[in-house]
Image 1 (tube, rainbow, N blue to C red):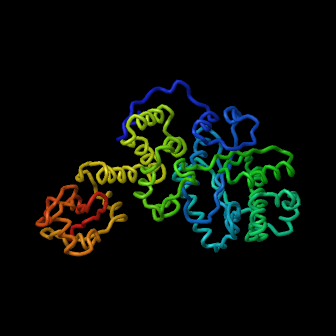
Image 2 (cartoon, rainbow, N blue to C red):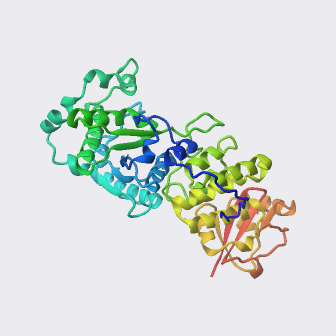
Image 3 (tube, helix red, strand yellow):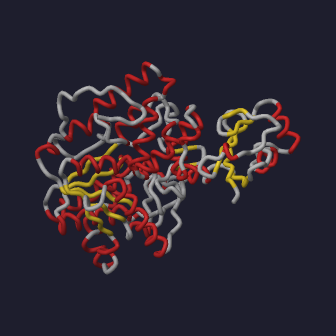
Length: 431
């Protein structure tokens, strides 16, 4: 039974879905070369999923595909995770209007380690095999590549790719031979993994269909054998019609140094009503009964945002662990949900100090300096006015201009100062 704070009454699942049914229900079906998706239920496939180390973290766009990988893994299919040390040297040109800036080998090595760690966090250790295409490309000569790979590709078909046409057509920025060859390199990945490990399916996001097809065709031409692709749609924000995963500050990253755990949680908590159930299906492992109940709860009382709370906690737990998810949930419930400030713990203040202004305070101090120091007020005069107007709160309690900080205000060596509804700061008790 699901027992987190967003409690819902669960029903019983009458029919345990097969993998193909679950993928369809969750929205993980875009295109596939399989003649019948039900083959996923009767055969065990050896699958690979690839990520280029173009950055030292993945985004929630990548996370959608990784969650699909997790369903394949849970159903018993064998998983290979490819970190593209070789393709990362070039960069995927698909969807890019201009040539990528090349990264150093040191940057790529660092990025590979970070991405592999994130994938392990989501999928779990010992549930996949990690491979790097740099290992099989580093000793390949140009002549070997042209003879064994390039010979099998038609220039006519390559030039017909939409992203190639957009780059070399009128007004396009052009494309280097390095980026033009990206599709061939990725195609050879499939061939190598098929020969060495029996990989017979690539799973990817919808934007990788063209590159994946090049691998299917290469395997068929060289070995005469059939391999397959399964892609998931790109996740769209139904309210805006734009690609899901962008905030006002840019992409939502899995690395907490780039998108803090608190910001990550808040992003999901603010998910649009139109899309929240779709996001829960994609980004969590909650079963159909639970999701149906969450949908009913949101329909009946949308102001409670029951589904958003479930989504935020579950995705944060998957990416950052249960303790971190519980911490940011407590913080949100205190700051925005009316929960008791004394429920906050030391680790919660570590999360808060990464997000809010901080001011050291001593017992007996007034709050004017704290308001100015944390920029909750622009001057001492404005700070007094806010206090006299009843616009200042300490640990959720309204305070007046004569308030001095006391030991009873201390929560785990801290306190939270707020001006108005949303402007907050952390007070750190000085030793």
